[in-house]
Image (cartoon, rainbow, N blue to C red):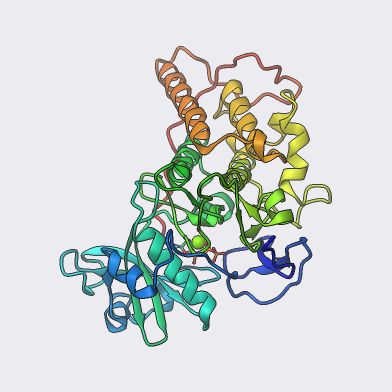
Length: 405
Ligand SMILES: Nc1ncnc2c1ncn2[C@@H]1O[C@H](COP(=O)(O)OP(=O)(O)OP(=O)(O)O)[C@@H](O)[C@H]1O
Ligand SMILES: [Mg+2]
C-alpha cells in the first residue's frame, strides 16, 4: 500500500504559537520527538531534475549576500514567524532590480530560511519552488524567488501584511482583534478558491497541509495559501487516489488518509472543514487545555452541528450579534459536510466555493438592509431559541485590526 507504518505526521501542539511542534505516529500516538519538519515529499508533475525545475520557472535566484542585506542580517526583530522549516524574516528589495533596498523602501518581502540540514528540508524547499514557480492564482501566495547557495536554502515571498489566519484566530493581544463574522466568511471563501484552483482539472494538485497557519492574509484580508512543501500531484487516468506516506498536521488530516495513506482531493476538503470549524468556533482543532470531552474539536462539535437547534453552542461567543441564523446554519452545515467521515459525502471544493459565495451574497444584502436602519439589531439567541426561523441581525463593518508586523 506504500504506507510507512512508522510514518509520523506533525501534531498540532495545544497552545502552539508556531514556535514548536511535536509529532505523532500514523496511528495518532504522540511520540513527542523533535521539531524538525515532516518527511517525504513528492515533487514534480512529470519527474524533473532539480536543474530543470529551477530553470523552468520565472523565479529570481537571490544570492545569500543579497538576502542577508535585505533582512538586515536576519535581524531577530524582523522575524515574522517560525515553523518547522525555519524562521521567516521581513525584508526589503528594490522593485525593479530585486536587490536589497533600504529598510522601509521598495518591495516588502518575507524570507523563509531553512534551518535544518539534510535532504528532507531540501526536498520541501524544491517542492515549493516547483509548485509555486508554476502555479499562479490570486489565492496562492506569490513566490518571488529563492536562494540556493552552499548549504543555504531560502524562499522569497510577497509579504502578507496581516500574517496568518492562525494568529488572527488564536493569538490574544491588542495586535489581533477577533475577526468579525463577515471577515471570517471572506477568508474562508478566499482559501476555498485557492484549494478549488489546485483541485481543478488543469491543475490537479492535492495540497495536503491545509491549516490556519498556512492561510496568509493581505491588507484586505484576501486569503492566500502558502507552503507547498507537502503538495502532491493528484491521481492520473482512472486512479482514484495516490498512495503516500502519511504526512500533514495532526487534527487536520482526514481519517481515511491517516488509516490508509490513500490521498485524494477529499483529504483537502476534510482539512478545509476542520479550518472552517475553527473559524466558526474560535477553538483550536486540538486543545488539551479544554475540559475533557472538548480536547478534539471535531469530536466535540459534530453532535451539535448535526442538530439545527444546537449549532449555536459551537459558535464563537465573540461573534454574537454578527450573523443571521440562516447564515450560521448554512456555514455550520457546510463544515459538517466537509468533515464527513466518508469522503464521498464531502463536497468538492468547487461546491464549497459556491456555497460560500451564496453566503457572502446573502450577508451583503442583509448588511445593506441593515444600513437602511429599518432592521433592528439583535444579539445571538440561545440554542433553545434557535428554531431556524430567519432572524434579523446586523453585520458590523469588518473590524479593522492593525497591520501585522
Ligand atoms: N509571506 C509571508 N508574509 C508574512 N508572514 C509570513 C509569510 N510567510 C510566513 N509568514 C509568517 O511566518 C509564520 C511561519 O510560517 P511557516 O510557513 O514557516 O510555518 P507554519 O506554517 O506556522 O508552521 P509549519 O511549519 O508547521 O507549517 C507564519 O505562520 C506566518 O505568521
Ligand atoms: Mg506555513
